[in-house]
Image (cartoon, rainbow, N blue to C red; front, side, top):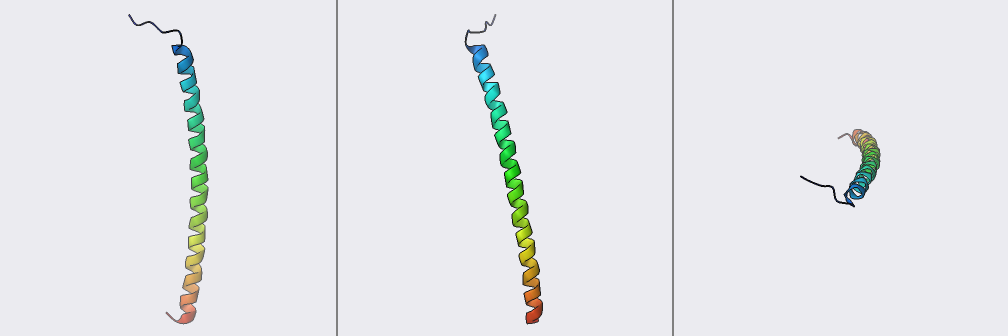
Length: 60
């Protein structure tokens, strides 16, 4: 029969804490990436509008 070693419970708790920390960091990174993506998308849309206006002025 399997017996739990003395330090195993502490190691499992530490691993669980690290998982929580990594999960929180990933959420933060995902949020930051989504914000950056939306910002870049908005800039691209604005540039497309400006380009369309310039092309209309040039008669292209």
